[in-house]
Length: 459
Ligand code: UD1
Ligand code: CA
Image (cartoon, rainbow, N blue to C red):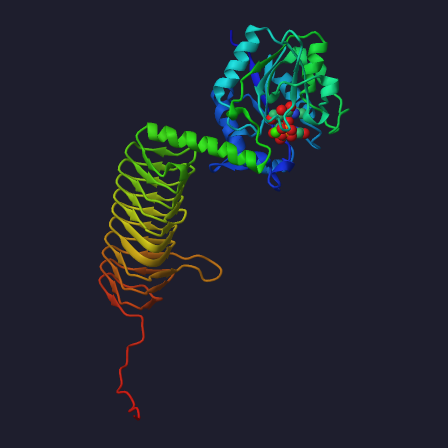
């Protein structure tokens, strides 16, 4: 039995409790937006059947997930989670889903297995509606789950509206915000939602009470205090979710043979790939699509984002690399900085206080001290002296610097781009190079030193 199940992700809210102007579902956890994690798990089972309700700064959310294009639903204004589902319902009906899994977009750590389990159990129980519940010591702002004396679910009452005198005692069981609805049974109830409550919002959770009083089959499955099922509402929740995931990811890499020292201060994003035997010493941050090959050493205080680091390379202390390729056996740092578009080929060295941007350093290039190399191509075996600067920007546009193979650029040289230096050329220290240098030439671009006798100083 393989029913047709679609998904509605509710992600239109502002997230006022985050105190931020960016939409809550775009707040990052280890470098990826919260909603990325939701999709990551859902895509395994529901690819092409995920509809996301957006509203607050909808354009930003849409732009962040081009893979979901065509399946966003606008909720404007945002009148509550029940209203969010009402907005999405026509898509659910049009797509002909027999069941719809409805989830909060601010619950990033829910594993795919939970969605599968909820679906399986609900189908086995022939439920019209099923939801996931937690039992927490701190119930906070979660909706309270009310059960009948026989244990069956009766309703979910939002925290603000909950009144022990009216609703009876709550034993700490709360709603996780993950639901499975049978489309034909729940559709008719959607029009019956009201905003007659303290928040004046339409609550998706009211569907539970409505289903029960309409004698539909409702089930509420308790998952204890599973921390990965908690919603993220505040900066504190965000930090908690991030720390939970951080520990899990670091533990996984250790399990797979990566040597992680000072593990408590190592942050690795969910898309990174790291070969067994790699050594990482914290504090270190490794984000985005970073690939680290065998034999690499990542020393402490480094930040890597969207980089590929090839076999045997060393990223030394305090180096920051972003959107760059580091070839086999290269070294970067200490205090190296690679900005997007940098390529270091086999054995190249980028030393301390050297910044490289959108430049190719071919095999064996050495730029060991205090340089800025931007929009440059530097041939194999070339040595870049300390203090060399490519002057790539004239205030309006960026220009290229081309340096050949086996070139020696003396210390404190300014290369005013666009400019080229041919193979085997030598540029004298302290030069300002504004004209192309031919292959094999020796270029001086500096005032000649004059040395005169000193005037007599009277005693
Ligand atoms: C919700 C549940 C609560 C549950 C908790 C679990 C309701 C009314 N309450 O509360 O029972 O314990 O989740 O984490 O559903 N959203 C929209 N449109 C809106 C309002 C919200 O799309 O008009 C989205 C939000 O972006 C968010 C999700 O729905 O991703 C949940 O909204 P939120 O305001 O965080 O609800 P909670 O107060 O956490
Ligand atoms: Ca929430």
